[in-house]
Image (cartoon, rainbow, N blue to C red):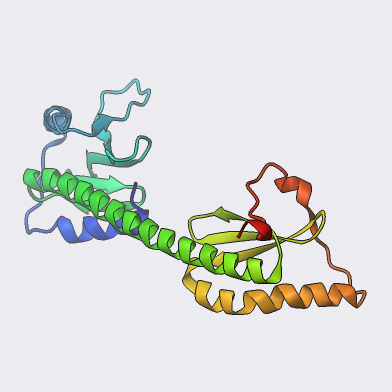
Length: 223
């Protein structure tokens, strides 16, 4: 799971600190970058980014891969600035390098951030799964008592409830995980109110149930 640019910019500011930057004469740049590239590419999860350029390479573009996600990378560039100082950059953010070891510990830091972010995401998914079970359990109770069929779809931040208001007509209700308790309190009255208003002649724009004809509907008779 790649990191956002703001997080990486913060890490760059915090990580690369010191008093005397690494400075090399212009004629030393290419050899220095090439040697550094060789050492960095010994690290698992590092890949060189290739660009077509007729000029000798004066910089090193590479990616750090989140090994838990096949397609997730963050891209960085190591080069010398106009003052011949070695810098590390990511998008518009950059930092001056003071010690070579800072580059390798920075890579370790990024990988640790991947692990931390993945752990937080896994925890969030587990919590949301528990909320989904609680929501569906409550909906089943209401559906059985009020006699309506329903279907649910799970998303990252919400559960979508599809209720068959009458034959061939459905209503979709989004239930955010962060507010599911408050939403469920009003769910029964919402469905009942819409049904009552229909009886009084008020019309609503509903979707056709054919959209979900292949879905695994839960009927109130089965509860």
